[in-house]
Length: 216
Length: 216
DNA sequence: AATTGTGAAGCATTTCACAGCT
DNA sequence: AGCTGTGAAATGCTTCACAATT
Image (cartoon, rainbow over all chains, first blue to last red; front, top):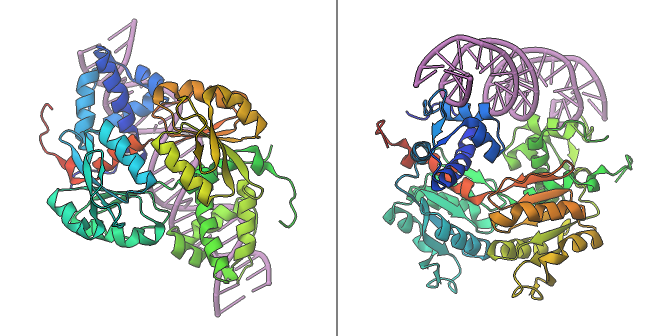
């Protein structure tokens, strides 16, 4: 019932504001204007004000925003204020890197469980989290109240794994597998496909300015 | 002079079409319609046709697209047909994972060089590529005709490293560092910020549906 | 008969411009 | 005087509907 119709792009900017606000508050600066926020994030002041206005009026006219307060507000909007549990599915090189990265830095989105299909990896510890077998996935998600799944499995296994995540009760998936997930409603999927990112970058390179309008 | 005004979103879809087309051609299927492509990619047929039409008329009315031919065309549009060289800057866990992933799978965008600031990592080999010191960055980019930079350095070093990449002649950067890069024109920057992805996912979770409209 | 290619309509997001507070 | 909050305009992207082509 809540959540009107806020642009996905705006949601993606909130964590950036959050980062800058935390730095600001840490530097004992109390008030920050949309212009300063714009300077630090690279977005326009109007866009920042509009993004924030979707959720309420957090600033003071003629003054600006209270950095610490706004930071807490955004945390709450995102649902980070009491932490969200995540499971990492696939402990390959990428999964390993994400686990280190994420477990050490974030305490708001926490990787509390790791599963892998490879028996050789099961039982090993990554940043203090013991790898469990894929067969435990649904159970792990249910037991640990996990809301986010991070998928770093091979493309061929992505769909079935995603279904297990949904079955367990996961509500959002960060999918690194180069596969289109087809899930029932109630699960938000965000894809990060490194091959796509690299290949599309090539377009913006002089390599794509080729002449030769004839047959390839 | 070339490159009119094609939506970035359309460019990002091209590699997905490419992937499906290659699978299609590999399965010895010659002709594919926009409807079939839509089924396999999850985009609408109209969108696919419009995306392709930005670059020319590649299909046959009443029939469809020649999979192998369209695949080659898209390769060429993206500039992948004769390969693009990339440098990985930062051989930490994430960089390591990307190198394995990328060097093994892609031959169109090739990581031909790796540099790292840590002397302990310099000289080591990752997937057959020897890690060189950061001080060699500009030279490496120039010598090996590198057009793409992949940044996996700490946020504090991202800006200066990016400037060195530009100085060497890089034209596109895939930036994993949680920092806004400010570069002169001529360099296209694509950011992938894993913290942002994870934190924004939390919004789509029941964790963000909190009541308590009072002070945080 | 079937499917592409495309102008026009529709929708979403960003930018503008200024009224409204402090 | 200064900065926020917000309707309105502008821009950009997607979907529609159909003419064009094989």
